[in-house]
Amino acid sequence: MTAYGGGSSNTDTGVSSITSDPLNVTGTDLCLVVGIGKESGSTINIDETDVTWNVATPEQMTDVAQFTEELAGYYSNWLMWLDDPTSANDDVTVSFGATADGCGIFAMFFTAAADVVLADSGMDTATSGTTLSVTVGNVASGDMVVDCAVWDSTGAGTAGANQTTRLDPGQMDAYSRAATSTQAGADGGVMSWTVPSISYGAILTALRVPDAGGGGPTGGNPSRLMLTGVG
Image (cartoon, rainbow, N blue to C red):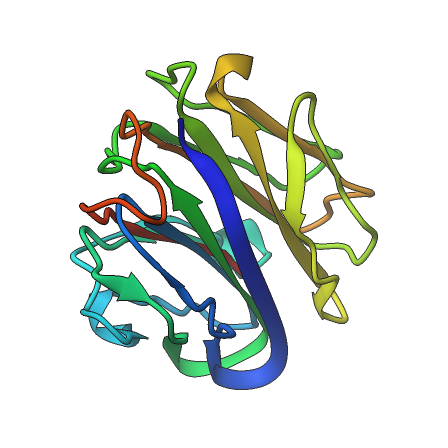
């Protein structure tokens, strides 16, 4: 059964890159999920070449959503993962190539995890209201679902039913906030957040971390890194 193994987060303002704290986890059947959030007055894209990790360049990167000037929010969200790391005992750094007004990075470890499938992910965006919700497909009872939410107000958000808030470092800058949560696969894969208000933009992404059928931090076949961010 896939399980949450710990994590760390970091936020910063007026920078062009951000780095997570070391997680110091080694073993097998691991999945490292990383959320990246960015808020700024300009469009910023990132790809695999902008991410540095101690093991390898992430193999898959998907620009899941980007709030540009058409949505008046300049909030961005990415999902990324790395297949089969041998360890994960160092920092993860993401470079934006331009200065972000505010940004956040959320690194989370999962044990007993099989390979992530991009199709088993989802996203919701909003420019008004107070809620975000997404349903992740193909979720089985031994899986874990992980999300990353970013919104354009500084008040705390509330994770939905059967979700456990994992990393909530507070504000990314004076205008935005981000947090992450998980849900056991047995609870169905509906991920949601309620936030104080959405005036410009908010994004919720979620992804299924499959059950490897055993293993954990002492086993033998490490799995993937996934990145999800907002800004």
